[in-house]
Image (cartoon, rainbow, N blue to C red):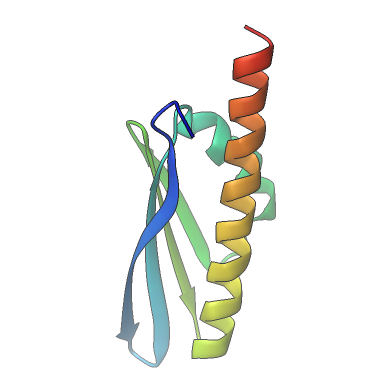
Length: 93
């Protein structure tokens, strides 16, 4: 995208006390709006916070497969939300 938005997440995965954890950090032109769009779909295993233009999402699941599925879903949702915010900003300002 031309606005400097980066929807390619960086991820750190760790294993904590029998659970698996991933941390995604993505940057957005409007991170607060992207976060607001995603929060209704967040489960108890997810924590999300905005740090400036970055959205940091922490996901903790009991299994590697569950973690992978949740991370995959989150990345798709982030990409779609970011594209919608970008489109509405570009075409409706």
